[in-house]
Image (tube, rainbow, N blue to C red):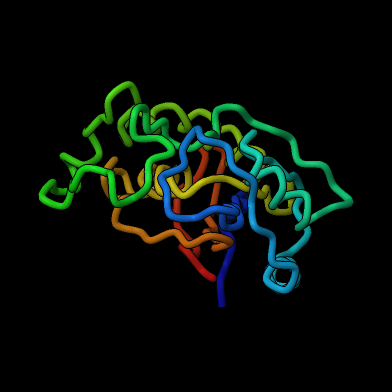
Length: 195
């Protein structure tokens, strides 16, 4: 049985539905989502109604939020875009460089040409996660963010206190990650990557 800390709330992060044309790296590339009504219905049934619904401005996130809660428009938050992969954005996975030899700390600092590193992403989204976490602590109902794998990993890194820590998590499409939040933002992981 889970116990809530007094004055705490929940930040629920949902990764968007799969993209319509899979097989390539999409950060700022903005393809539509492929919506599976049965998966969306099952996900919605497993979640409480959000106290607030926020989305990345990416089409795939807005579409996912819109089919999950069609009666409630999501508020876009421009800071919650996926990592900017620069020259690698939109490339087929087979054309990407092999980063396997890098350890977690080096991978977090690696920057694609013209893009941002995972560490840069963590810095960019931190204020939004703190803001939405404070809102969750005051809301009495979960604040739901429909976002990207990178943003969810950044949130996990923030809670774990190490930038590279979030890179160890696999974040599937339409998975749910729940964080306990207080007035200082997210502070513990309730669950990560549930599908």
